[in-house]
Length: 234
Length: 214
Image (cartoon, rainbow over all chains, first blue to last red; front, side):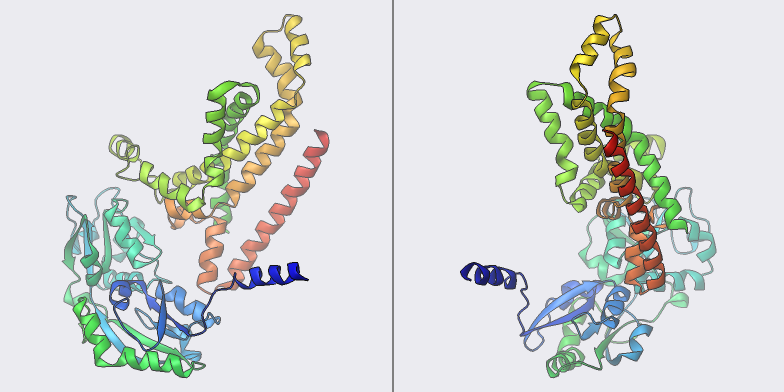
């Protein structure tokens, strides 16, 4: 009997998830900024590609608040968009010291040139990058040179390591830079509307709603602005 | 389904390296003695006991565009392993090699040394002894080792994603299952999973048949 109790106690200790903690999903581009936010109660962040987080949320992952880097269509059935917490812009980046290929030069990329973008189906930055490249009329020319990152920070890392010659990331990602330089901001004519909507599931608890209220209040927006995010559409 | 084609290609390319290198290592481990053998034994086991993400990360540091081996490869031959099926094959080979080497070691260790001595006493050269006596006797065990190595290569996920990345030419079946699942594409994730289940069961049955012959 004692042994059984001991085994059960051991088993119970494997599941560590304090009930008082609220989990909030957030686009990985928000990482440094989000960690400075101070929502009510204890919050643990789940960072990742917004599309991955949204599909986890849709399947009942244990979080009811999500700050995505773009509109997540699959969430419309189960969640409500509360506000836009911030906006952002795209930049073309390259490895420090390597040759610079501008947005319009992508129409005729150099031999063995690799352009890293996020995997468009799950990484909003990748979908925005594709949208911008299409608007610039260079997508078809550069598509064979495109390689995919699993989230926008992975795209950044691929450029930092020199595995990709250039990449498309958010302007705010460059603030964590080393060995990476900005080639150019996305031209105004092709600029996608990069915004961060705050989603709350329809089954959210009062505590989740309080966290969302905090995220939509001016104080939270100020923290993001201090990290280079825009408080208005670009 | 292209993911299966990528997987097949990656596994076969990995085996081209894993079978001879692992086989030779196994032969050495079965017959070698002393400190050198002990060190080789420990080194061979590293990819088996390390988390695959660490194996992939170390491969990236070593063979990446700016790595000590990757930089000369890229500069001299224009070879870039990350985001290529060659990179995926290297990741698969790295994790499959220990299974081949240890399996081959067991297969060679089981060969009766007396029979080899008889062959040698009858004037066969070491090479002939190996070809006519040792290899046929070790063959069923080598078959088991190759099957296990191939299955490990087929199932490789962590090292592949960390080292080779996820793109068209590296999208093996295990990676495709993960990303299809992430996107909520259950029909794709499930159909690929079923194919892998069937392949594993078939391989398990094959293993059984091979082991009966040893």
